[in-house]
Image 1 (cartoon, rainbow, N blue to C red):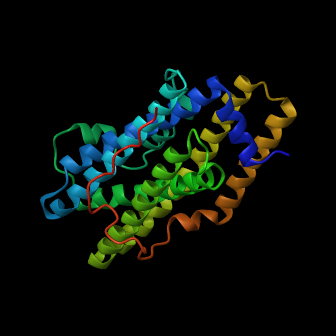
Image 2: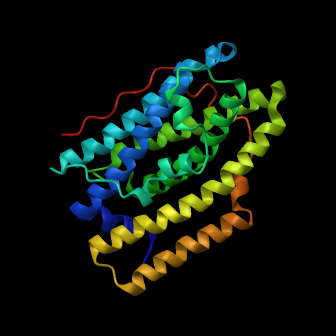
Amino acid sequence: MLSAKSVFQEILANDESFALFCSIAASGESQGGWENARIAALVPDSERELAPKITRHGADEDKHGRIFNALMKKRGLDPVPVPPETDYTMLLEKNGIGLAHEHLKRDERLTVQDIVTYLSHSRVTEQRASEQMDLLRKHFADDPDIGRAVRQISNDEDNHLAYCHEELLRFAHAGHGRAIQRTLRECALAEIRIYRDVSLAVMANMGRILGWSRAKSAVLAAGIHAMYAYERLGGWRRMVSLRMPERRDALGGPASAAPEFA
């Protein structure tokens, strides 16, 4: 039976597909770490109290990149080049989602609107990350090889999502509500399209490595397109709602250490 669990099991069982999976994930996390570090350094003076949380966010992303690299090292594998069509983070940036890297490379203070844009972008992408890790946690939390990594990253992504909700609500109460909703909507509609394209590209690469039949690849592609259709028709709205999270001040402390892998 073809299921999300069986597909992941097949990818994780093969060294080449496992290396590609981890390399794609590590690359995206590392880029996120850099972006958050730059944003923390450029926060406007009026929002300096937010800088430690943004720094913590970036430190978590860097840690996730190290975890994925450690999982490869544990199996005696080296990172592999990431096909550009599978680079979710860079494709978001190229499509104008979030703060442009050219902007972040300059030593110019960001504006409050820039911070609202960053948080809105993060709220959308962290929703995706939280859902993806929740799926992996459901099926692989007790896996002897990747279980600890999955649990750690999943918990962190839930913290990131909670942080975005709480901070965006603070900005909304300060009078930025319309800008937040407009930016959230723009980000969500772009993200679901990019996520569809990246998912198709990842599955195409995995199918080549694992020798999937045309029929199997077609079924998986149909599932990705069906998910996009659901999101385009209204599923995207889950990415733009705001509610006070149960986890308050989720990024208020130092980042936790990455688990050790023998």
